Amino acid sequence: MTFSALISSLVGSRVCKIVLRRLKNARSAMRAGESEHVCLRYADLWREGANRIGEGTKISGKVSMGYASTIGRYSNLVGGTIEIGRYCQFGPCVAIYGANHPITHLTSYVGNALFEGRLKRNQQRTAVRIGNDVWIGHGAILLPGVTVGDGAIIGAGTVITRDVEEFSVVAGNPGRPIGKRFPDEVIELIRRMKWWDLTPTELLEVEDIFHIDFRTDFEAGVNRIREYLKTRVPVGIGLPNSGNHIGISSARGTGEPAETFARGDGTIIDRRARGY
Image (cartoon, rainbow, N blue to C red; front, side, top):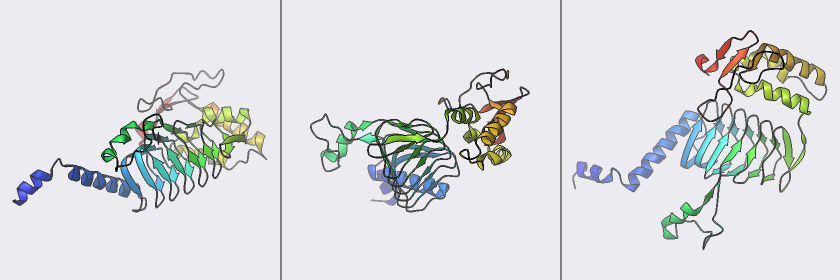
């Protein structure tokens, strides 16, 4: 067989497709700057930027990571759809499952040794959605179909079997809420502020807020956020009597927070034009 005939026979073959997929995953890993020891198996991985994935981590399925979110070493993100917001941090050995074995079929087995793996199509796939500014501790497990709200904290070793409310602290097996990070008044202000949607330059303007301990300087923190919100309000989230309720737009058609903002003087600012 000539060399050209060999190449022609390989194009479109299963082996060729596997090689191309692995090359694509390797390039994707290199662009992100993570360890070359990250395993991307049948993965469709999208990153907004400034992301880090620890060595030994295994990823499969459709996974998206918001800006600056990081995943600790030896974690597993498996199957289905997994959506991670901005500024999230996962400790080592975190496991997130977007797929589960079938339990109402003749067998729960989906390995390649039976019918060449065709039983994988019977897996139950339910998206896992994780909000912004979420901290997940060492060894936590998130099961298919759960949603974790913005600002939540999941303790080390916790098993999440149901949705986690925003700004709540959850621990145990199964995970149970043990408290809220802030009083409702502060949570409402953070909802309006949506600091995770600001550009790095805009964040520098409010860095002082991030250094306030709301446990010891509650009034100072609340007043500083209110002061900020009077001059800059996300479109569609106007302060009472501020006259800034202009409308709601959606980023990338996914229902995510608006990309445009309104200042107190009514000026519309488009963050996309700033190259964020």
